[in-house]
Each structure stands twice: as structure tokens, then as C-alpha cells.
Image (tube, rainbow, N blue to C red; front, top):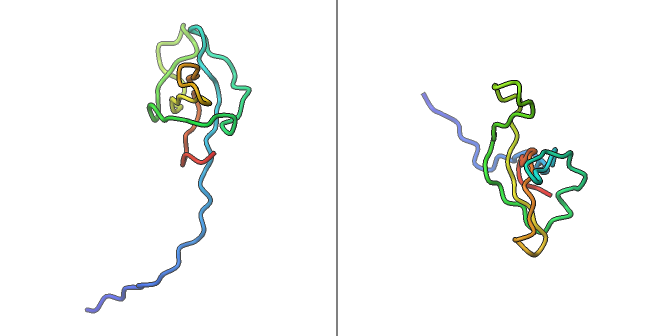
Amino acid sequence: MATAVKILESKPDVTPRKIEFKTYLVNHTVQKATTVPSDYAHIELICRDYLHNFNANNSTPQLKYDLMFAYKEDRQKGILFLGKFNDGAV
């Protein structure tokens, strides 16, 4: 039995999914993110599906977000964000 192979098959245009910031970590607390990823020159993905728990009374993690580190020019002034890295587009 012969198998047909399409050599020049066109792929549909797929728009990369953008990075989403949900919350950020500061002084051991979680705050709602008020900035957008385009405000930063560098965004590093630290961990996909990072488990965290907003409720100290509940020992089961509730949400899976990606852990990211974002900074403008000075890496020492970076911020940890929780959100969705998706395809890494800004």
C-alpha cells in the first residue's frame, strides 16, 4: 500500500499567545499585578505550572501558574510574577 506525503503543505498562521501577569510577589505577600509584560525588557520563565497556595488554611495548592522573573535593565531590581508564560510573546 502506498502512502501519500504532502511536501509543500501550508501551515495555518498561528498567532503566538502572549505572556499574562496575574500576581506578583513582594515582601512575602502576593499582590494583584498592575503592570503588563510589555513594560519589561526581559522576562525569564523560572518554572512552568508552579504550585502555590493563597490560602494558608488549605494545605492543597489551588492554582497552577508559571513563575517568571521580569526586569527592565537592572536585573537586581527584578520582580517575581505568577501568571501564564504561554508562548512567550509580549
